[in-house]
Image (cartoon, rainbow over all chains, first blue to last red; front, side):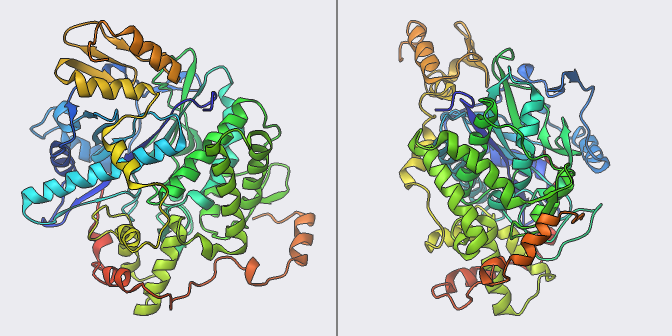
Length: 495
Length: 58
C-alpha cells in the first residue's frame, strides 16, 4: 500500500434522461431514481455541516462559487419546487460505504474510500450496477423503458458533468510541488484515459471533426481553480481533505473522463497514484514545464497518435508520448517490484504507450476512445456515413448507456469483444461489501448494523441517536481501522 | 504552434512515414462476429444526442 496516497475514491455524475416526455426534468428524474434504490442504506442523513467547498488549497476562502447564467436561471426555478434541499439531494449512504445522491441534477455515485486500485475499480463498476438497477426499477414503475442513464461527461451541447478522482495526499509537501510535478502528466494522460468524443464543444476555439480522445478536454479552461462548474481547471484547488486537515490534502482531480472500460479506469487511477507517490517521495526532479498547458489539453485530445508537439517554457518541444514516458521511466525506476498491483500498472502503462505508437489497433479491446473509434468506423463504412452525420454523436452517447439491452459498451461486453479486468464475483461483492481495511469498512458496517441508530454520517465520522460519535478523520491505514474497531467493542456488541 | 526546435526537425526528417508511424489505422471492417453490435447500433435513434439535454454538473 502506498503511504503517500493511502486512500482513493471516484465520484461519478451520471447523465439521465426520460424519453417518454417532451421535456425531461433532471431534478425530478434524479430524485425518482434515488428514491427507487433498494440497496440497504441510510437515507437523507448526510452531515453537510462538515463540508466547506469555498476553502482554497492556496490558502484563502472564496465568497461564492460560480456557475453560468443558464444554470443561475435553472437554480432560481429549482427554488420554486415543492421540495426542501434535503429532499432534492436524496442522500444515501450504502452498506458498502459508498455515497449515492443527487448532485447538481445528476445522480452521483461516490465509491467508498479504497486503498488499492483494483479494489477501487471494482467499486466503480459496482456503482454502475447499482445505478443501472435503480433505472430498471424506475422503469418497472413507469411500465416502459423510458429512463436511461449514461456514464459519460457531456450532452454534446456544451453541458458537462464530472468524473472526479480523489487522492488523499500528505499536507506537508507544498501544494506548488504537486502542481508542478503533476500538470504535464495530467495534460497527456488522456492518451490512455480518454473516453473519446465525436466532435467538439469548445465555443472559444477551433471546432473539431471526428473523434477526439477526451470528453472533458473542451471544458478545461485554466491550470488552477477552485471552480468546478465553470473555469474548470487541470488541477482543482478545493481544500476539503475529508480527513485530518493538519496531516492531509485531498487532491480532487476533475479533468478526467468516465471510463466504461474497467481496465482503463485502473490505468487512469493507477498511473496517477504512482506519479503522486513519485512527487510525494520527492523522487521527481526537473519535470517538463509546458508553455501553455491549457491549450495543450485540447491539442493532445485532438491528436490520436500522441505525437503532437507541445512547447516547453525552454522553447523546445516534446510530444505527449514522450512526456508520458518520462513519468513512466521514473516510476519504473523507483517502484517496479514493490507489489503485484504496482507491477501490473507499470507493465500495462508501458504496453499501452508502445501499442499506441506502433499498433494502435491493439487498443480496441480496452481503451474507450480506441474501441469507440473502431466501432464507429465499422458503422460509418456499413452505412456510408461521414463524421459530420449527427447519428455518430448519438452512437457515441449510446456507448455509455448503462442499459444492458441498449448500451453499446454493454453489447461489446456481452459478445466478449472487450477485456474483462476481474471476475464478476468481485463486482458482486463490492455492491454489498465495503473495502477491507479502510474507514469505509467502518461506515459500511455501521449502515449494516446500526442503520436505525444513525443520526448523521459523513466521510469523517458517524453520529448516533444513542451513544458517542465515531471520529474517522484520523482513521487512514488498515491498522487504524483495526484499532478503531477494537476500541469500540463495548459500544457495538456485534463487532 | 512554434516549431523552433532544430533537434526535433532533424528527428522528423529521419523518421519514415511507414504504417507503424502513421497513427491509428482504419479498422478491419470485415471483422467477423460483429453483426449483433452493428444491429444494436442501427437501432439507435440518429437524433438521440440532439434530444439529450443535461444541466451543467461539476
